[in-house]
Amino acid sequence: MEYLKIIAFTHKQIDLKSLGKLVICEQTLDDRLKNIQAELSIKEIFYVGTCNRVEFIFTTAEVVDKEFISRFLHVLNMGLPEEYMESFISNVSVYERVEAFNHLLRTSCSLESLVVGEKEILAQLRKAYECCRVAGFTGDYMRTVMERVVKTAKEVYTHTNISKNPVSVVSLAYRKLRDLNMCANSRILIIGSGETNKNLAQYLKKHKYSNFSIFNRTVENAASMVKDLNAAAYPLSELENFEGGFDVIITCTGSTEPIITENIYRKLLKGDTGKKIIVDLAVPNDTAPEVIQNFPVHYIEVESLKETARKNIQERYEELVHAEGIIEQNIKEFDLVLRQRKIEIAMSSVPRKIKEIKHTAINGVFADEISTMDENSRLILERVMNYMEKKCISVPMVMAKEILVKNS
Image 1 (cartoon, rainbow, N blue to C red):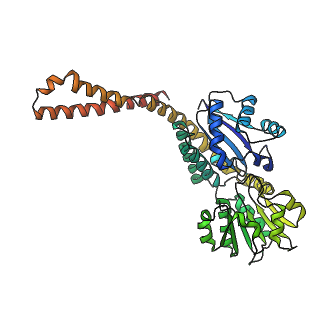
Image 2: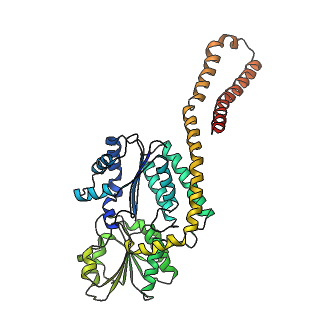
C-alpha cells in the first residue's frame, strides 16, 4: 500500500454548497482525469462524487503536500475563484498508505457517511470505480484494492446491525415530508431519475401517493421509473412549460448549475401563491437561492438533515466498534494478499518460459533423437513432457506462497 493516496473533500470540513463546486460532470470526467495522470505522475486513479463527499483515490510516488494538492486542483481546472481554491486546500483531508486503505474501507462501510449505516455508499463507490476502470484509469492494483473493499463492506453489513432499520438521507428526507402532512393527492414533480429520486419515490408510492410527473434530460432513461410509478414523463427542457401545477418538487440531478431558477419556478406556479415543498438532495443544489428567498417554500436539503444524522451516529456507537474490528482484521489480511499478488505478477512469466524450454527441447535439442522414435514412444514422451510442464509451472508458485505465509 506504499503508493495508495486519497485526497478527500467531505461534509466534515466543507459545507455542502461549497463542496458542490468540486463535483465533476460525467461529460468532462475523462478529460480531467487524463490531464491529472499526464501532469502529476499518477498511475491509477478513480473519482467518487456523492451528496457529501468528493474524493480522488490514486497511486503515486509523489509526496502529497499542499503544493501537490494545489497543482492537482489547478490541473483539474474546475474554474474555481482563488478564494475557493485556498479554502479547499486548507480543508482537504489527505490519506496515505495504510491510512488511505483504512479510510476507503470505512467509507465503503458508511462509517464516514453523513448517515452511518447508509448502504448506498458501497454502490456509489463500486459504480465510480467501474466507470474509471472501463475508461482505463485503473489497473491490477486498484482492482485488488476494490475487491477487498467490497468484501469488507459486505462483512460489516452482514455481521453487524449497523444498517438495521437504516436511516438514510432519503429516509430522513421522507420523514421531513411526512411531518409536513402532505395531502394524499399532492401533485409531485420529480426532476432526475437517479437512485436517490427512485428511492424517495418508492417511499411515497408505498404510502399511497400516486400523482407523479417525471422530468429527465433523456426521457428514455427514466423509463423504468415511469413504469413503476405509472407517471407521465417529460424532457427536462420542457420543465418551464409544464401546465399541470404542483405541490411538491423532488429534485436530485448531477447538474453543476441550478435547474430550478427563479424564472422557471415562477412559470411552474402559474400564479399560485400557496406555500410549496421542495426536496433538493442534489449537491450542488438544483434550486437557485432566489427561489428560497422570494417564494413561500418548505425547503428540505441535505444540509438540513445533518442534526438527525449526528443523532444516528450516537445510536449506533456499539455497532461502529464492531464494524471497526472487522475493518482492522481485513487490513491485516490484505497485507498478505498484496504480497501474494506481487509474487503472482513477478512469476507470471514462468509458464511462458517453461513452454519455451519445452518447445526448444522437442524441436531443437532433442529433435533428431525424437524423430527416430516410433509413434507410441513419441506419445508417451509427449505425455511425460506435458505432466512435467504443469508441475514446473505450479510448484514454484505454491512454494513461494508457502514461504510467504510462513514468514508472515
